Amino acid sequence: MSHLGKEPVLPVVVIGAGPVGLAAAARLVERGLPFLVLEAGDVVGDSVRRWQHVRMFSPWRFNIDRAARALLQASGWTPPPQNDLPTGGDLVGRYLEPLASLPQIAPLLRFGARVVSVGREALDKAVDAGRAETPFAVEIVQADGRRETVRARAVIDASGTWTAPNPMGAGGYPAAGEARFADRIAYGIPDVKGQDRARYAGRRVLVVGGGHSAINVVLDLLALKETAPETAISWAVRRADPQRLFGGGAADALPARGELGTNARQAIEAGTVTLLAPFRATDIAAAPEGGLLVSGSGREVAVDEIVVTTGFRPDLSFLREIRLGIDPALECATALAPLIDPNIHSCGTVRPHGAAELAHPEPGFYIAGMKSYGRAPTFLLATGHEQVRSIVAALAGDMAAAAKVELDLPETGVCSAQPTNRDDIRIADTAVKCCAPAKV
Image (cartoon, rainbow, N blue to C red; front, top):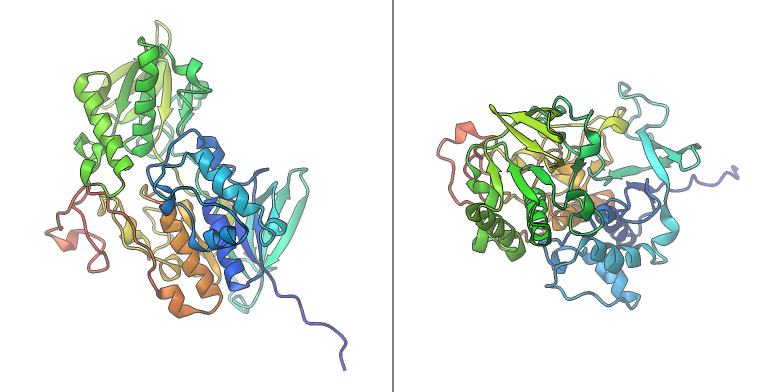
């Protein structure tokens, strides 16, 4: 008779302790599944802290996962007013930190654990035999440089995209000179009104990008200009028709999102912001009189500082040994691509989705959160909460719950036109509402 005990049940490894990673942890607690959360940073919500000065356009009721809320309220936590708009700092301090400190989660968080590879234990990608039964091997590098391998029954990659911004160059590669003048270029949303004020006050600033992040930066610069009137603001967008920049205005189900576009339109009409459209940056050079000369689309603009808000892309480098089903254009899961493709869904209104659409050829592996959208720009936190709810249900064997849609996603109010030539789009009857193809 053998005295050997059973092999311990392996955990579900969650990569990233941001909003979606911690929502996954709450769902795993809810389902009673063992888990481990690996975070490359030293603190919870490390990437969110980098935009902590930014006010979100979605209110608290869209930003708190239901399972996380239940755990927090059981501990005596008081939720913030559901219709208030949090900043990134609020999201960390009033939600993520209390959630991460719960006794059901805190012991299962590991900080300073950067994932450098994910694969099957002792099997490379080409091996079929026994693959689905073989544990995952998640290799991490700790803060002191030591390497360690964690075994897992499943992996949820919620590592986000903040550390992989898209370059300024319109072709997907850095513009000529972008690396050379990196000290004059910021990516994302700098704290223009706060700690970065001295860098931009009274300077000629070029904002590159056509999304909500770009509008946030433009409006922050306008606020700065009120006290530093010599600040000159140029806004470069790639599309020929700038009207979609401004969103749905009053028709947007998230009023703060609609107001962003309305305020940006008013600034352009008032002449306080110079709109360059279309403008596809190709070259950055030193200007003879000082500053930088940015060239593109047959014109040049002289600036002192550049803010690039052209979105982000997923880092797939550490998933080289995972069998991924990746859309060739968006770099998201193949089944998800038709639902979020900005060439089709120019308004950003998409169908809720879950484990089925997020599945890859590698059983038990999922990408969730911002990273799941690949290069598509329309992700909301509420979408990530629904993703991990469905994924964890599937990992628990509850396929009925995994298939159920439990997301009420707010409409953007940008467009309502149905495509007339359905042979020209990548989606047929799977969308709740299709939009007119985006103009670029």
